[in-house]
Length: 368
Image (cartoon, rainbow, N blue to C red):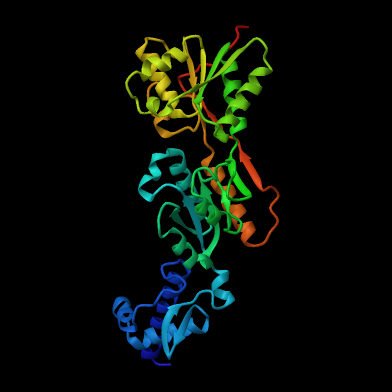
């Protein structure tokens, strides 16, 4: 074999590997038309003969299909080899792509899912159920997806048609436990355990008049946090506990006129406060500051979610961190197990959060 032939084979092998890598990683998807041979040759700086031989090899492996002697379309599921190498995960949300950041917890969870997937050389595609192209794009490329997740979606938050389409996705995994979920599999933060953990921490601060602030909503995660909070405190008979639901929670979170006074009024008789989320906890701190109420000497505050702003403000907010990384890891492992037809031990996995001690609470240490 002379030098020119070796060089040709080297270019052909490299080109074949480059094209195969792009197909496997989803840059080209099932049914897509390939660029013309001349365009590929110019792009990769090789001859058309090199392109033609690389494509013929990929066709023999079932990754592309030929029509009338020409390579025409990507066909990764024409044979078992392409299907076996599906390497993407679908992530469904009822937020449009430009709105995902509105919910900081879901935004962080999406980031963690991407990181966890990368450890398995998997890519994640975001699908908004509000987008008109959502379902056609997913159906067109469904053979390359090893699993699918949904977050923040249940029968009450989307239309009947959207819910039925989600429910029809095999082995869909829900990443936030809700009522009337579209899938039977779920990996979620343990909201009940979080409520108990918050109450336990406030008890360690030697507080006796506990208040939980939550929206006037029947949302399952909030109910679970309330129940955990109340159950833990009910085991301590000398503690006063009340749950106060805020009507028009958005006006408080958006700092509309009068919110400082109304929020302060709810906390007048409390020495400890558990807020259903960090944003409300930060507003409770603002109300206490505005009314010259020292924290934590007069009022202790603990939030839920562990968002970044609460950990980088003054005073630093005590909170319960959402276990986004653990949820993402467990969800990826569950998706791979279901894809490979392996048995899943539990269909619903609840992962407790972690206490983030801050400056808005102080644990009481009894004198010796």
